[in-house]
Image (cartoon, rainbow, N blue to C red; front, side, top):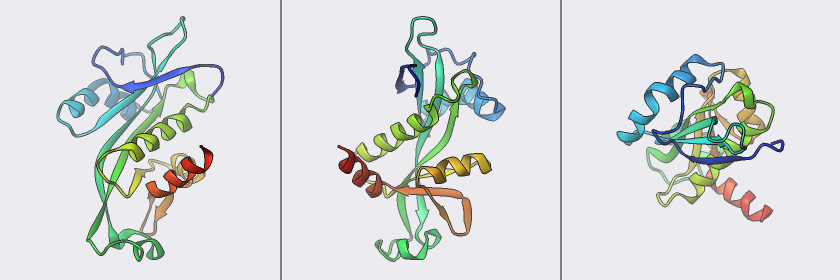
Length: 174
């Protein structure tokens, strides 16, 4: 990111969501109208990047959501699936949404939010094999591929990254 500092925190009902504009109406509408309901119902957790400079302190610059999920063992690439226990599915964490406000683009915030989601997933006290995402379009798919995600063979817009890989990279860079 450029010199713009951000604080990532759980979405709070007091955060101003009205000014958020990612350029994707479904993502903007979700943050404005649905995110706090999903959090109350424990369907998803929503984390926001808040601008941390005096001029725009507290403005939501981006957000992502996490929820529990599973991946069918049969859907994984053969080489990976053979190394896992023979359960019908493996536990995963789904990043359902990731969006950056247009005013904060080109600062590396999307990658920083992804890194935060991976960090939270690795630290979770409940076991999960991978972080998975549904790429909404080719641009999103390219973003996740660039960050090491692996597409499911039969559903290439569903991608995953084993959390053991993230742990190894984190330990290597520490």
